[in-house]
Structure formats: C-alpha cells, structure tokens
Length: 48
Image (cartoon, rainbow, N blue to C red):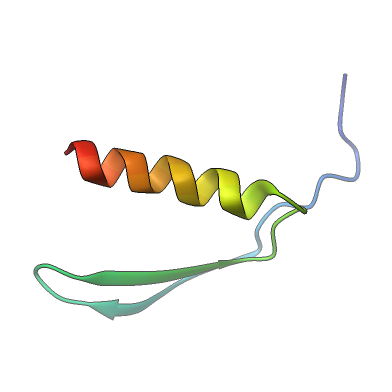
C-alpha cells in the first residue's frame, strides 16, 4: 500500500541549543502523527 498524499515535514529547525537543553521545531505533520512522534522521542530521551 502506497501513500501518495502523505504529508511529510518540510521544516526542521533548531531553535535553542545548549549543553543540556535543545528545542526543535518540525512541521507540518499529518493528523495524529505529531503525538506519536512526540511520545516516541520522549521515551527515547527518558531511557537514555
């Protein structure tokens, strides 16, 4: 099954960076994907 109209993020920007903090902006996402990606990133960061 191919998704022809899947909207992929076009923007990935580093907003703030330091030794212990980083803020990134990525947009736009398909409906529901931002929550899924956010949860995955949170789990990865908490386990490392």
